Length: 376
Length: 262
Image (tube, rainbow over all chains, first blue to last red; front, side, top):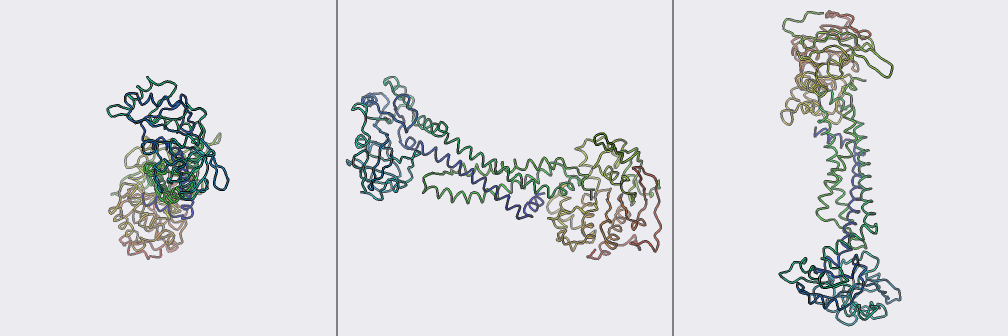
């Protein structure tokens, strides 16, 4: 049975190549779309997930990270006085204009944090020192946006909201989900760059480290009892809200998931067509097997084995192609992630896809009349 | 009916077999009230003009087709009362088929074709290969075991098909015009093989044929017309005009008799 399955599958090499191409195309499409989805998801909430904060205090009804709204600095002091709070840092997120040295203008997201505080800092710093943002005009940007921001090296200058900015460091791989790159600087500098509307409302978030002996939930409860007009989220809650907003409220996530689903449908259709054509080519052989006393289950196993062989080989080639695409994406604007769980999951998806595709053929051989073997 | 040889037994007993095909308002009676006993150790020829019901009868005897009426016993078991999903077991254990068009698997070698029939019966690996080698030796093709069907002559293909049909050591062998597509030399090799399988191995061989060249090999010749069994003849005496003569002596060793090019 196994031998027949393999021989029939590999016998017509052109058809088998078409089958493999269809599987590889479908899997790569699915990997790219799911990888983009994961990349987008990670990108949207990276600043929260990597903040090392336990809790985020945000202005009431602010739903996600990129639309932070300024609120009174007095709240910050109320937070510091709340039981369960070990550390609280002021944090700013706001959009501003970046004037490039050559005169062009880009929109950026300014992130203001307390250098050395450990909360809300940029990560993956590959050039420069994070403490250099304490300098009056020091900013850190990501290598990916050098060209977009018109800077190439440490010391290059630009302007943010009519204030001077000087690049003091570069990060690697911190993407923005919006078209506005992140510019990290000290909280103090960020006030200059973003020019809050009032002297009182001077922060967008408060990042909190919970004191030993308290759980985030306990600290969260204490804060809610003392501080009004704000929402208090654990990092996980705020991260999830941000991801959900971008992925589902905007439709961006649905778009890539739909494309992934289309990849699956195309894959099933292509593989089903080729496996069915191969089955029809060998239909008399299946009839002969039935006449010889083979059960339907025996024939199903032949077809399923062919489907699994197709899936495993297609998966192998797809992984090679996907590997290069994922590698290439690290240098591009859109991150495609392929974690181990997805790599393993794709194998099962490939097998599922090919077995689903084989169902058409299984239905066909189920209905074969073995009497056909006597006709001609 | 012909009296069976003293050592033979009735392996197929058909009583009142009829087959009616319906398509819309149209009805076609392919078989009518066929009564038949087939004995082991005999080569039974089933003859008749096209459309007389030969292949339909063979299909019913082979449990591939169900009769509309009547009763069929194979090896004493009433198969007409069996459920559809039990019939493959009967085909695997009791019956071997030989087809006019050989129906070999083109992607498998001769030995693999035979081993596949073992695989269908749950015998795999070394025992299947061993049995395939024995059967190919029995039909005189031990030297062609690694050849693909496309590299075999028509006669050789049919002998591989016979080896495959013997894989389950079936007491009944049903052959549908196995010599029709063969030249006289190959056809003779095949009919002699079938005759030997009946006479020396005690199998009941039923062979549908149009081929007058094989008449002298049959122990019984049953004539069908319009779906009815109309006449039975006992074995013919071979004459010098019989194209396939001389028949292989009963004691001949097959594997030694067949040149490889058959």
